[in-house]
Length: 186
Image (spheres, helix red, strand yellow):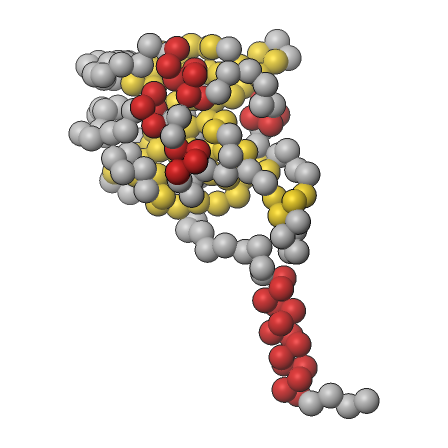
């Protein structure tokens, strides 16, 4: 049976649309700096900033920046302005919209420090510690951190492995001296 070129073209367009059903438009996320604080413009305190202890509780349900449970954040200097890099667990879907069990699948987003609006977002692979959801949430750790205005400010929260268990490693910045200190909390 001979098929017309228009029919073949239509079939190819339909196949392409189905294959990209799970695709989403995202901006390219730049790689993070090598170390916390790299590139800061002489200060770790933006003139206006949403403090992690204030926004971590509500953000997962209110922002496209977060796929699910928050597993990390970092304050960065990007394109002459501060931004929060947020990492979260997410759900991978196949081309039919069905959930695929993949605990390493996550979302990484850059958001404006003032408005928390998404600047860029994309998929990321979660670390072993980020994949383990047992223990305290990012919000509860931020509350326990001692973060308070005007100092100290959490500039990074990272899930890391310590003695075989996931813990939160926090980098705090003294906003008066820009000195960074690292502490671990469960």
